[in-house]
Image 1 (tube, protein in one colour):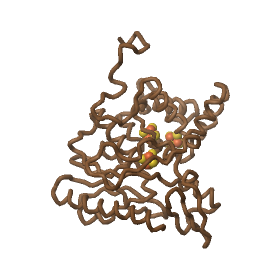
Image 2 (cartoon, protein in one colour):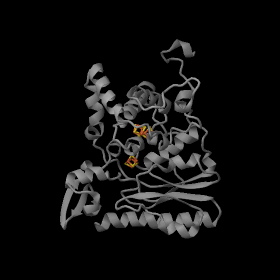
Image 3 (tube, protein in one colour):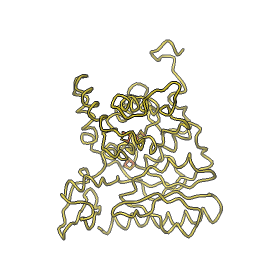
Length: 327
Ligand code: SF4
Ligand code: SF4
Ligand code: SF4
């Protein structure tokens, strides 16, 4: 790994170990939620612990991809949580929705420099991740070593698309900030590429596009289960009276599921990209969620998870809003 970037990450990691240990020792939190190395190369996995001896396993690197905010609605007690910029926005959104009490959460903020998309790294090198020896960061470059050969790529070619459109990589809401604030690694054209392609299609072409995509959906619900904004105790897809969607994954019902899910997360979605990443059949779900994110911003000047004291988008209206029926 390139020394300077490696040391910055290690500094943050050491601070995290110290702070997490102190929080558990003082009884300020019941659990720490963070990341530990995964069992596969270049992966991490969530670590949830109440044992101070576990905190040295916590890592901060370019692969801490999960949005851990999802666990806040599942665990009881006072929780210390590691949060990147997008994760902290999801936490704020949950606070706005009264799903999480601000006083019960200690946010350990990670100023983020973007997360590496392994499938992009594999495509660029033509190697499977098992054949790659090392992936490291050097400023705005990513250095990948495979078969003894080292190649450099611009960071914009290797990060997840949502990271390339990220507006707030440094958490705005935190209790402890683990490093110096970072600036967005912006590449809006790449980030918006698929969304813009769809915008350029006729309604008939869009219909065909989504018909093809949702014909592959196996309705595993990974996209819903991983989403911090999808927190209903009983999802509409499980209702039987009325039955909104058939249980068999026909493309029409799959499309209906995603359309309704998108409406439900409007004003809560922070463009964390987790639903698209979790999809086992690579349906470009962000083309729907980011489109909705942009529409909410354009129509209501509202971005999810920015201000914990602001009311949630769907619970209030302004006099000048277009629809008479809500007045
Ligand atoms: S969206 Fe932003 S904060 Fe979230 S992982 Fe990507 S760069 Fe980091
Ligand atoms: S994760 Fe993909 S396959 Fe699973 S339900 Fe969602 S869209 Fe369908
Ligand atoms: S809809 Fe997708 S991108 Fe939006 S918050 Fe949920 S998981 Fe993240």
